[in-house]
Length: 174
Image: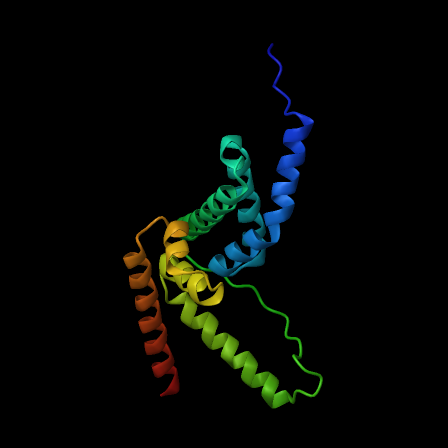
């Protein structure tokens, strides 16, 4: 029987630092795509497992961070394709300011519902592009790299998403 090769202590330390430095960012990125905390936790773990299996990609920290983001995005999109759905978890309502009235709280809750319902209408790629560009504030070039497509395709996804969302809001107003 052959023994498995144990990673060096230096390798384990580098992996632990890599995970610690990127864990929160990757979780948030995946959560914004899948919309469910439990799924996002599982997919974050899956993304890191995929990344850590390729030690050669982790040598350059800047490239590794970009590469990890791409893995995370693709993992989330693949999950949505496999499951054919987008699931959302309940968000605990907390008052943004102590003096907020029940009417203001209700209005904010309704706005959140509009947003969640509108996002359900988008394809996974449209949703990912819109979230990465408009929520994360990433430049179109970075979104294109993360989604592994051209900048023109990203602009198309975002334009389509905004049109769908605008139509949805117009229907809600009627």
